[in-house]
Image (cartoon, rainbow, N blue to C red):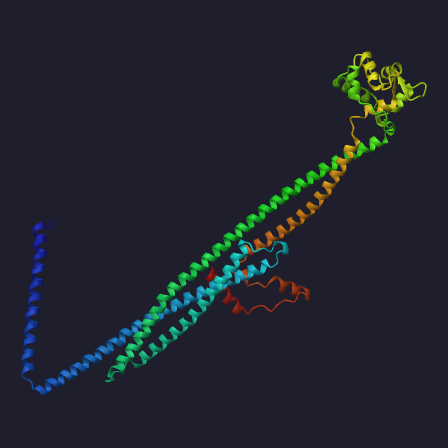
Amino acid sequence: GPQTHSEWVLKTHSARDAARSIRMAIGTEVTAADRRAQIASDSRPSNMTKLEEKLKKRYRTEQTIHDKVIVQTKHMKETISQVMRANQQLNRSCTKVWVALNVVEKRIEVRHGLPEQEKVQDELQMALEQELEQVTKIHSTCNDWVKKGQDVQSRLDRSLADLIAKRISLHQDRTEYPWEFLKQVHECDKAGLQFCKDLVAILQAVEKVLSSCQQTTAAALRRRLADLQRMRDQLYYDLQDNEAATVQAETRIARWEKQIREFNSRPENQAKDSSGIDFDIHGNKAGLSFEQFRKIHAFIKGACYTGSEGCQMEKIFARADKTGSGFLDQSEFKASLRRALKIPQKIISDPEIAAFCDSLDKTRSGNVSIQALCAFLNMDLDIEVIKRQNESMKHMLDQLHDIHDTLTQDSHRKREAWLIDRECMNVNGQKALELDRGAMNKDEQQGHKRRKPLEPRLRDKVRLKIQKALK
């Protein structure tokens, strides 16, 4: 059956006791061997002892140098690998900075195509110029560090090659040269490690500055496009309102000109009232209110319209003038209202007709002047006011047309600027390497001559760098 707990504990303690006994035996044997060696050493001659000590010291020195060479060789290989990785990272960062520099230069070049009225020192332009300045500085810094990294790596390679070449014979040299050489190698190794440490800080600073500049420019680009789009929308709605106002003004001008033509074409308007009648005063004297005058005026003038011929009031009242004197008495005027104009008594009563005639009869002769009657019926149409309004409206319409043309041109420029700035936002590393627009237009003018393409090896190398930089 299974062992008990006591058996399990006893088994473990037995193994421990056996191990302790063996360790004590080994210690006793080592102590006895050391004692015998010390007795043998004390019985030897003194000259032999000094020689042995010198040989032992020399052996320990050679062994130390040999061990240091091995350790330093290992450290040098690790340092060289670390420096190589750092240089590779530095090259990738340099490629990224170079691509960013090409992008900002391409964006500035694209913005040179803006219309003259849209070329302003705005936030985007300042951000691009600042980014160009910062990226140029860090690009120069990266180039300096690339040269420094190449120098450090070449010195490490030479030191490692010297160390490997002298590792067999270096420990046999009894001068101080091995220690000086190892010290130089150690200093070179230390310089390589310090280079890697400093490079990490430099690359972090470069990445921070580059990211900050790109974020600032991207934000400025978005705000610029939003501002342009908002201004384009405002201009669009303004142009729509201008077109609606133009249609409204042209309609009003056409109506006023029609009224002026109709007014000038009426025969009754050829007659001028020189009597100087004040209708309000005479209406008050005759006992007619303003509402009664207004009602009489509306019904008589409305009844004088004869279809397509317009208002023929002078002809109608001239037919009632049997004597041809240009005056109508009350009976003739009432007959023309009842018979010719078909105005019943329930609309305009006989007393109202009598009071109306009295208000127009300045001489109190009992007769009404046809000219005064036509002037009364036309007194609601102030043709001079309409003419002034018509001229003022034409002047404002001309101004509106000029402003509309200006806004239209401004809208076109804003659209072109929006397209150019959107093209700036779409510029990336690949587009930055394309031929500029001016060179392409020049090639088209020269008969669509194609430039010699890049060699496949060089093209693949450039594409690989761009892909690494964009990761």
